[in-house]
Amino acid sequence: MNSVFSPEAFANPGNGPLYIQLGRLIADQISSGQLQPGESLPAERDLAAMTGLSRVTVRKAVQSLVTSGQLVQRRGSGTFVAPKVERLEMALSRLSSLSEDMARRGKTVESTWLSRGLFVPTPDEVMVLGLKSHDRVARLERVRRTDGLPLAIERAALPTAILPDPEAVGPSLYAHLSARGLHPVRAIQRISATNLDERDADLLEVPTGVAGLKIERISYLAAGKVVEFTRSIYRGDAYDFTAELQLSAPDEGGRS
Image 1 (tube, rainbow, N blue to C red):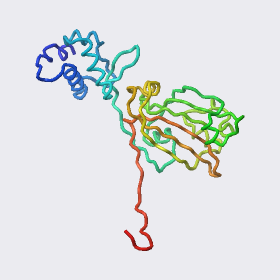
Image 2: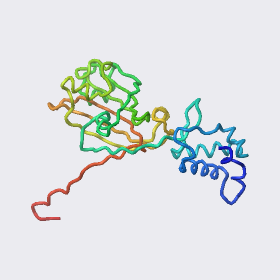
Image 3: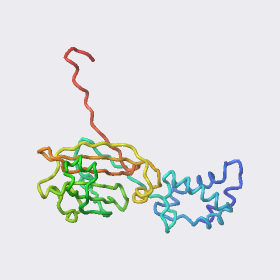
Image 4: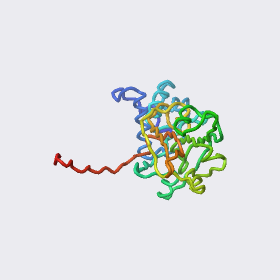
């Protein structure tokens, strides 16, 4: 690697600003496979010594690649080549959990629990779930991973009549609800773009401010009772959402 980052690579001033040259060199090493996903970059001071560039120039080059998603930085660990993200296609016409979606692809989902328990509901939870002011709400917050890659942060709120013991939930919330005869049968889902704040970006191992998808879902039982109010954050580089559209029938008057 030392030869790749030798000072001779930056001897031509006609190739543009030095930080751009260094960023391009690192990006080329990633695209050619010389730097593999998960491989660590030399420390900033070491890169500066190898290249003969200033630490400010090295820092600027690295940050540009972090912003573009080609590198990731982990506090206390260093800078690494970002993992390759397999884009997943999810149908908007099917009501299913992330665990069910991944199972159809032959993958498993792991959960890292951030919190779960019974809490005083927020005004939004009172309104959406139809709670009374003295009711408690069951909340689940977790990071969902597949193949070690964090894909989504799920924050679900349910009435205690539906989920009296959040600690009893295993890998799949919907499997747990199904076992109690409370699997939702329909849902209203809203998807919007968002820029990830520092906490969510750290949890998903992406740069702060990167684009993500915010998904709010309100799910219902067959009788019409709200069973779940979930607000999730998905990696924007990992998902494509698809919907089947059909042409509506022409009006009776024959307009086209």
